[in-house]
Length: 401
Image (tube, rainbow, N blue to C red; front, side, top):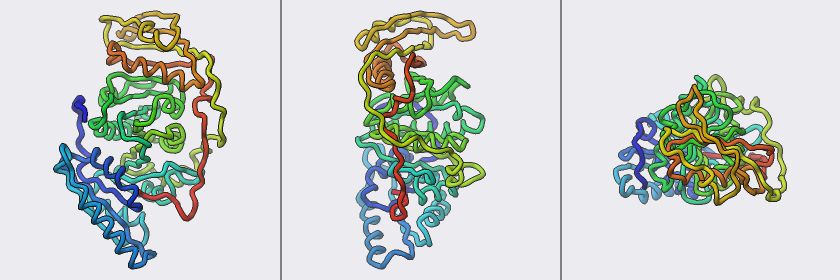
């Protein structure tokens, strides 16, 4: 566990509720719950028993849950966390989860997700029902293929609107909790055009801010890799729900994805209704992987002060040719600005940006900087190579864990 700057971590970690439908999903869910919970917080593992279950299945689920809670004692910083098991009788799983969250006064409900969506469901019918009716904050986890080493927090212009900043702050709070357990600095990724300054707790999450002008799923696809967990805030728009879920799941096939939903409700409507109006998801199909060719990326670096201005061409010398290097001081911005065009060989736009970003991320001279990337003569359409929609069947509608 690495040491990071302190932040206000109050709120969601006091009482974490983890609904479990499949015992195999418990290890990643419990690991995430421990990271998100307070060091002396309570974690409740929940199984909902419905009338459709026979006596043998009821006994098995009770036994599995009790065994899981009994063997999950915390260690180190988590030693004071308390893990409980609870079974609840309800007519449906969604009713049981909602009732348990209310009775326990859960400060966070953490559920597992397979990462599949359809044109009518976001997380699947079961989770959609819970999200659309919950009054508790929620976190929906699609685990990554490897253990977590870095946190990525994407920020779109919609997140900085008056109605969106609360959700962004909630997501940033979860990201702060996760980053305590990572080996690398977090990455704050701005997308779209500049609208408003970032909240302080967001900009301080990483030691520099990266900015990609493209749509959020293209940008996130360029910056993430296996070992990352993307913490996605839901913008207060109908399309923002798809942007934080389906599109990010497609563009980050190996990374973990944690969708943060403050208050558990898309205001004024349920999630299923919101999805019906969210517009069609990205076109299905597979694009060819592409042939490596020279791609030009304009990089702008805004330094926190004017001392020791670094030579950007030296930082990037190992990956390609750099020209049009310039330094300027805009009259309405006291920061030193560096600009350069980087020529790098890559099969996709995302590959080019990822190569450049990796070099700039490791440059100690750029701590505290904000770095923007703008593709010259390229298309955002080659950013994601595989896009698909996986229908959700009636037998497996998606569930919490």
